[in-house]
Length: 53
Image 1 (tube, rainbow, N blue to C red):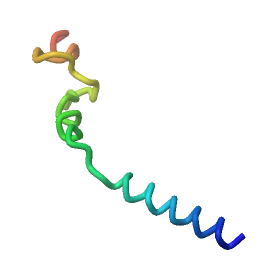
Image 2: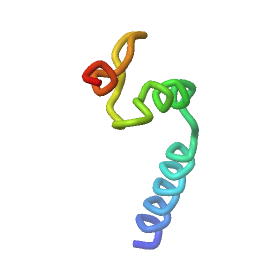
Image 3: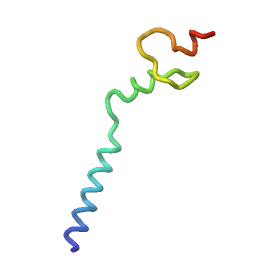
Image 4: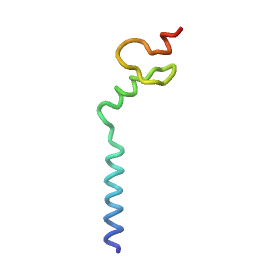
């Protein structure tokens, strides 16, 4: 029983370490959002909320 619990805790620690890793494209995805409405922009043109006005 102790062996199962210790393996589970080790597994959870490994998952936590992988969860803290930063993906290389995370900053690029963050910059792909419109600063006004928060939606993702597709392409290089302006967002749909900027086209309306």
